[in-house]
Amino acid sequence: MADAFTMLLTGLSGAGKTTNAKMIVTELQNRGIQVELLDGDVVRDEIGNLFGYTREERNKVSKIHRFLAKMLNRNGISVIVAAISPYEEMRESYRNEIKNYVEVYVECPIEVCIERDVKGIYQKAIRGEMKHVIGIDESFEVPQNPDIVVNTSAATTEENMIQIIEALKEKQFA
Image (cartoon, helix red, strand yellow):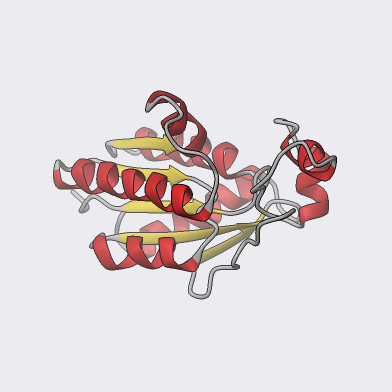
């Protein structure tokens, strides 16, 4: 049995992190791998929306994701984290703190993310009704050393999932 791992899917809101993560989780479960999905929005909701969206508060939420991932990994459960994780320091903390870490940059042009905007956050930010929106008034630091890059505007979710699963097989996690 492969060692437990943590995979972070990082990218803009609307890039397709959760959609890809759900498909990856299903595929891994079909392969008999114990895996949990930590979706950024769900975790925020479950902890009672204690934190806002400033850089400092985003770092605190990221720390919660890392803590949960490490705890699950320690108990033999692999983890897929789907969270914007916009700052390099967040991703470096994952890399430094988690033994079997895989970083996936879910790339998608901001224009496409704005078109998708299922939560309406980009439009609120553009109208000035919302602050600290990554890609609008806060920057997204493009990952410097991702293990995998998928582009959701150029490939299907299934194509991305196959690419990610192949990379996990190469690392002997799947």
